[in-house]
Length: 356
Ligand code: C5J
Image 1 (cartoon, helix red, strand yellow):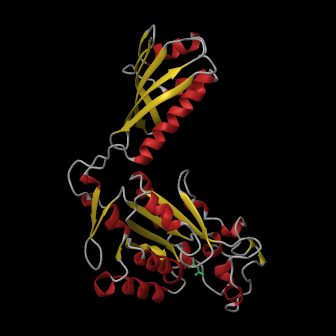
Image 2 (cartoon, rainbow, N blue to C red; image 1 turned 60 degrees about the vertical axis):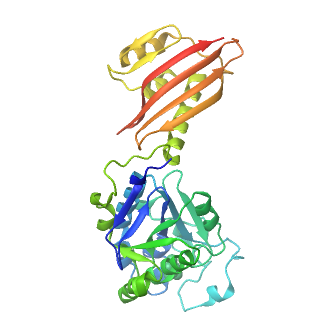
Image 3 (spheres, protein in one colour; image 1 turned 90 degrees about the vertical axis):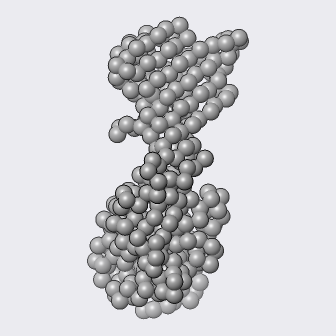
């Protein structure tokens, strides 16, 4: 369930852009070493790469915003198969570069998957769970399953960043526009080797009432005044549920291998943390820690047979589970309350019991 307060409004051109960040993805186009660093493909075409490198901090700020809002993030790379079977001859032979696609250069083979030059620059590395798409074309929808991935996740709105504005960014944005997405290009998070081409692209995108989409600077997107509604709260937001389930799985795995130190870390070390065990009431982090050190391991074939996970906002959730093990006919029940702290998710309350 999503409350309407997930809506954001951005002061954009040609007019206000409204999006629900649970249905919006950030698409970061081709922030690769081959385009942005000296010695890559971009420079081999005679370009000054410093204009592209200048946007890296802005793209990092946009990524931080998207991650904070738990938006879907997609990174693309223009990168071909090692045998270049996905690269038309016309693309290889175009222009007069000192290095052609597939040639060996200072950063490995130019625009070839897996080569150092095709990697995303270190400051913008994809985070776990983010999608990375290797694309053979300028547009990210051509020859990829990007559209299907976005549809599966209910995405209707896209924010665009990356390089170069008038080539891969604009092509992808036009492809997305034709597929029915509402698209906004983040003005200071995109760059071209030719500043005039960037400016022309921004104007073309938003001309004629936003014929391709909207443009706005990063500051307008992250402006806290953008929330529509006063108390934004997402309930059962899939990325938060996925994080909680991953924590729970890691907790169960630590339990099975009787990793006392790891188990200890899952519980918040605080006087207000409470764990009601099957046969003990433990008040406070120290009592829980002492119990862990003396308790017997659980049966190694203990199995979770049912789990219900819920989340309220980005930082609070509850998991209830039933478990069984070969050494008992009873069914175990366990409820954990999780809170996200600056150092990660922690259990602040737990209750375990057995029933016949
Ligand atoms: C180019 C790109 N310019 N990512 N690629 O060849 O825009």
